[in-house]
Every structure is written in C-alpha cells, then in structure tokens.
Image (cartoon, rainbow, N blue to C red; front, side, top):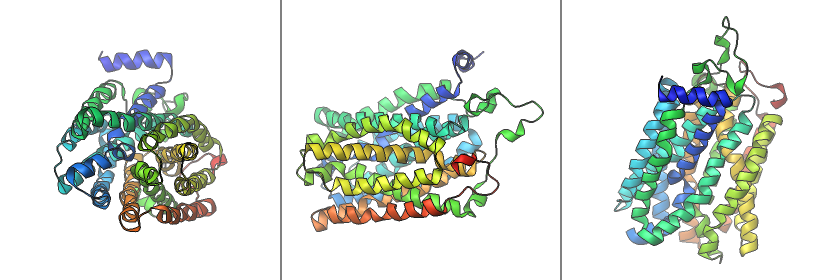
Length: 424
C-alpha cells in the first residue's frame, strides 16, 4: 500500500475526501500569488526604477505577455482532461517556481515581458484553473460553497504576498525577493499535490458531495456535460465570456495599479499597500456567503450582482483621499474579489457540466486572461499622458454594467445539461 493510498484511507474515514481536495485547491490558489497582479503591484515601482521603464512600458510588456500566454490555457485544459489535475498541477507548480527564480534575473523590456508571460500563464492561469478543476470534480450541489472556501486561499495571498513582497524588497532587493517566492512555491505546494490529490471521486468509488455511490449497474450517468464545440454554439457561452472578460480585465487593473492610484490621490504608500490585507479580510468573510448565494439564488442574478459590485469598485477607488475612504474602498474591493473568484470556479461546470470541464475552463480562462492582459493599458496611458486615471476608471465602469444587464435578462442553461431548477 502506497503512502497516497494510506493517506486517502485515513482521511476519507474521518470525513468526505472532497474536503481534503478542497484544502489542497485552496493552497493552490494561495500559491498562485507570485503570478497575481496584487503581488506585481508592489514590484512595479522598483522594477521601473531599476530598469528605467515607464508605467506604460511595464503595462505594455505585462499586457502583451499575458495575452500571448492566454492562448496556451485551452491546451492546458485539454491536458488536465487527459492526464488529470494531479499530474498537471505538479508540473505547473514545479515550473512556477522556476519562473519566479528566473524573473529575478530579468534585464530589460523583452526579458521582463517573457517573465510576466511565464508567471501569468503558470500562476494566475494554469494553477488557479487546475485548482478550480479539482473542486468542480468533487462537488456539485455544494459547488458554490466549496468554491468560496477554496478561494480563501486567494484572500490569504492578498493578505500575505504584497506585504511580504515589500518586506523582501526592503531587505534583499526585488530580484532576490523573486528567488524566495520561487523556493516557497515548491515548498508549500508540491508535497500536498503529489501526496493528496485524486482527480475525481469516481476514481475511488465515491460521488461528488459525498453522496451515496450509484448502483453498480448504472455508474456511467455520474459525469455528463457539453464539449467545447457544443458549448460554443450556445449564447450562454458568450454571455459568460463577456462577463468573465470584463471582470478579469477590471479586477486586474485595480490589483495592478492600486498602490499607484492611491498614492497619486495623496494616500501614503504604506497605507496604500496595506489596503490589500483589509480587502483580503473582507474577502475571507464574504466568500462563503457569496458561495452560498450561488448554491441558493438564480445564477444569472448573482452573476449580475458581481458585475455591479465591480463597477462600484472602479468608481470607489477614484474617491479615496484618506485612511477612512481607503478602508471603505478596500472593503468594497474585497467583496468584488469574492464574487470574481467564485465565478471563476463555478460558472463552467454549472452551465456546461463536468465531463469536459478542463477544456471549457481552459477556454474560459483564456478569455479572462485576455481581458486581464488589456486591463492595465488604458490606466497606464492615463497616468503617463492624462496625469490622472480618474476619468478612465469611471468610463471603464460602464463595461460591467452592460454585461450585468445582459446576464440578468438572457443567461440560461443550455439544453442537454442537467441543472438544479431553483438556480435557473
């Protein structure tokens, strides 16, 4: 009996093993921090000064590299469907550590763009997608709540990685900071993925949510869903893609430029950086509640509500002028992240089923990362050429409002996909 087998038997005897998978997936969300915009936010200034690059140049490198990396994500999704989340997450974790170490050696705009591309593809793209795949396979009725709990890992990253990055920059410089981030990625993620992850409950004779196993004569009905070509023929896919694109684009914009926006409005840099932990706290508190909403309220209305909160955050950040308003904005942004992270793991299996969720999640994540790649550009332009991002941020708020209206009016489950009636 292998160590993995003994661990499964011991843990599953205590509680449904999906909760163990959920814990590892949450750790994956936390470990994606080096590829997330909230971590980059504290590095933009030091990198720009060291390499002599403007904010527009850095945003351009970030955007182009992320855009190129986005088109690799459907391939990663297909690999997850083929080889399973355990194998592919192990590979991604190993490569993410390498990418962090290499990022500390960038010497100019080209290598910076390559580093951005690798970190975004492996961290923000592949690692989050693979973690969400694990939860989608192990939970169905409780998927919203489980996704909310998983995303607490992202809240922990928001609370830990920006101040950690600032501390490492102050003590060791920004280059060695990335070496430390790479080593910690290997340390905290590789052992639990290799020892604890099982791709699907059916692999161990279990069912999603810990439900009783089906009769031996009818096990095949456990996994169903549309494949990518079928999904692309539905209006549902494009409504989801539009909202996902807008959410990823604008959340990334705020993460990437939050410190710069607030300091430009007269907020001290130390206070601006510590807004992230406040947002993380609100995210942690609200995430399970948002997850419960997805399990109990019609999905299109929850989706629309998340987009409206996104618009409010874009306007809210332009109104920050002191500590009190910074805290109020941080709370709103934390709630915004609670919606966006739950949407990330919830929507594809909810509307298209589990059978091809890796490929569908990869395609959806590609759309999101394309949006993320474009988000910082208009704000970077506004900083460099308009002197202030306020007008641009308020105009950008119109995008999620339009997506929210479309979702509330027209989003429906495609024919051929089973769904709980109360969510439709």
